[in-house]
Length: 201
Ligand SMILES: Cc1cc2nc3c(=O)[nH]c(=O)nc-3n(C[C@H](O)[C@H](O)[C@H](O)COP(=O)(O)O)c2cc1C
Image 1: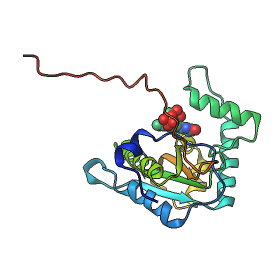
Image 2 (image 1 turned 90 degrees about the vertical axis):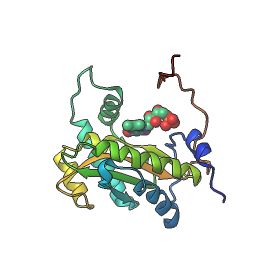
Image 3 (image 1 turned 120 degrees about the vertical axis):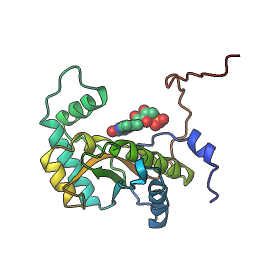
Image 4 (image 1 turned 45 degrees about the vertical axis):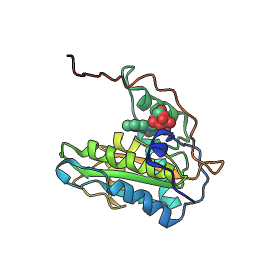
């Protein structure tokens, strides 16, 4: 399969949440990870740690831990909508934060490092674009970041290779879309305003 041109891969990337259960071939996942590893980082620190999970038991244990953690949480009306949605869904029970995707990549970086989230965001976006170019669906998944200070979550993640001195910065899911293709339906962009300052003579 010929990979897409860079601009096409960027402009057609959308979040894919419904995926086939099959784990993509290791070489394909590795290409996505390599795109993440090649992302820029503050002072070239290259500190983004990517924990790649394809183990079904681990994925379902994580889903259960996240479900319980959110179910035990009380949030006020001013909390941002996506966190409130996670809490509300978990209170109903059976909340699966990673949508049952076959691959979850969790990003982490050194606690206290000021560019931790910025560096991870660069790596995650590189991976999402690479995934699209390779006909894989992906979606940023933030619940483990929100639960970074939850002891049960951190300890479980430490068992998977997260450092005690690391903070969870984000993550993504990866897999083939339910119809074999990633979501590529255009989404109208009405936000992200642009201000130009040009020569005024
Ligand atoms: C920082 C960040 C956090 C996000 N967290 C989640 C998440 O936890 N779960 C989810 O389903 N989508 C998540 N998303 C995906 C957004 O909902 C999505 O990018 C947005 O609705 C625009 O749609 P598009 O990605 O298809 O262009 C996140 C995106 C970003 C950039």
